[in-house]
Amino acid sequence: MSNKSLAIIATKGTLDWGYPPFILSSTAAALGYDVQIFFTFYGLQLLKKDINVKVSPLGNPGMPMPMGMDKWFPVIGTAIPGMESMMTAMMKSKMKKKGVASLSELRELCLEAEVKMVACQMTVDLFDLSTSDFIDNVEYGGAATFFEFAGESDICLFV
Image 1 (tube, rainbow, N blue to C red):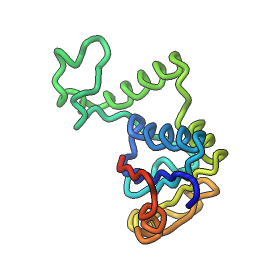
Image 2: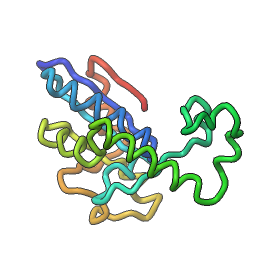
Image 3: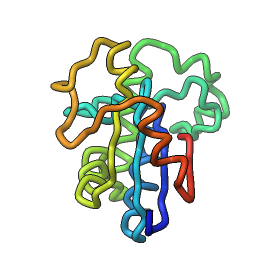
């Protein structure tokens, strides 16, 4: 590799955890880095043709809640049926108002910037997924494929 390089392992499949790999990758690519993202387990949701992910406040106690709910509504209360959908809609609305790009838009920006996206073949098989579930321009490989790039990268992140 002649340019600096960034390798990212994306493992999360929620709305809030979908942003870091795409924001970091598009920024690094704009700065001239060679970038590769290895999507595994729930991170594969970010490669589906229709990104349909939700916000999950469970296990994320640092998440600011609307109407000060983080102060008076216990985290376990967010498990109430319908709460996840409501919070996802609120988060998407807030992002739109603040001019934050959607995950699909950020993903497209990464593809235009030649960020290489690799789906973990083992996880695709494990979850009985098919290449037809995913966008075009995705490569498929195992951990060894990722290490070929990551082993020489300047920066390697797990998100």
